[in-house]
Length: 428
Length: 133
Image 1 (cartoon, rainbow over the protein chains, first blue to last red):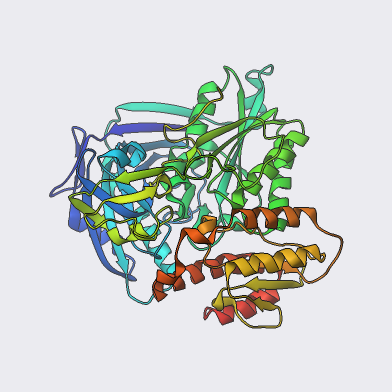
Image 2 (cartoon, rainbow over the protein chains, first blue to last red; image 1 turned 90 degrees about the horizontal axis):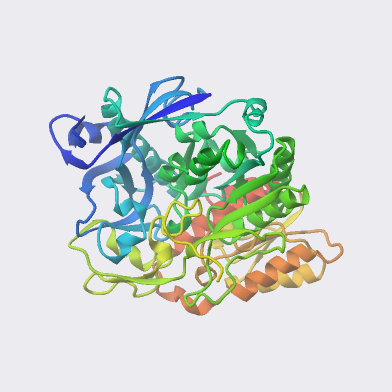
């Protein structure tokens, strides 16, 4: 399985007569874009706005972020099982509008969503403060239940990204990267003396506003399974997760998983990247046992010597993280965990809800309880009053002048547990 | 694993012979701890929902109806949840009824997903209670 990723660098977005890419500028026909999003007749209103790095602009509450990608060659289309048929993706060629992002906002429920500031101190914490963002503000028909509302906004973002990406289909990319993923046998023959490392990729799957979709299937209903990293790059994993903005994996994070990138870079040099195991984070303890058992079985079957485990979210999934770690270590498979911390505003409290002496190699992505003050912005896209009730916000966190005092938990991607950000720590 | 009891302060999951309705999240945690000490097993993780413990307006815990020897995993999980819980961080009284409803909905949906895995018969009953059955 070979996938070429062609990156078309986008340095500006503007509205124009036609949707096209010209000299690094993505021009967008606003009416056509809105017509695509409105294909769902449950939508009451749609507005699209542009937010650029450095602007005095705040986006709140952020639901998802999606990178525009289009299949140029090879089976299927991006977001299989949701917007395209369930063909196996991850082969051929895919073009990416690199530097552009679709951001969806919409008040699904009155809490648990995120903030992106395009400038100021908050911009240091979100990778999406540095992308050219096309923001979709989407409101469904009144009276629809919350789970339909989530679905409508999820699809609106995917449709917008697919529409924009078409503009890059016939453009010569600035760079082309090739990712090869073959059978376990051939992957492992390349360097038999190197340690085999598997990636255990935990997906949020607790319920409404806490779900992830794999080829369109709700991840809480899967048994852990193998997936090619190139399938992930083609949108086989889509976020329906609206909670804990700092450490949720948006669809953009899945499309650009930095653990997969790094494992590819080290493949054949320091390690053999022997595969990706996706698993879930359900709330019943029976599910946790079942899924962690299966993770350990699969990793052992693959002959893994080591595994990198990434978590999504906090609290409940800390138990899945530790169960996965312990069961892999018990098989003799050494583990490295990537997580974030909820260690209190002073950083003095216990960081995770679960622990084991076998979790002896842990990478942190930062303390989500750290406080930040965000200055008022001239322009706010979305619902600014959400700041009082989103995760990490607390009563009176929104000042009269628009200033927000909050934990960095409220900032989209601030402590992302795939490591798609800049924060960490090391022992001294 | 088909006999469960539901300890909750979420009105969307209320009534039924298997439901123990409490008046606060804290009371749910304490009641579950008492039952665990009597030999019931905790069936869901008390820190579900990616909401910080200080903002647990609603909690719903599923425990086995059957009793056996003390389950240490259950005890560790409930003790950790009680230790983390700090009701002082947020004033629930100032939330609007719409905001409370949102918290109820998300709590109920997560718990329904869990009940569906554990006890399909109870799932149908609770589903109809929430108006979605």
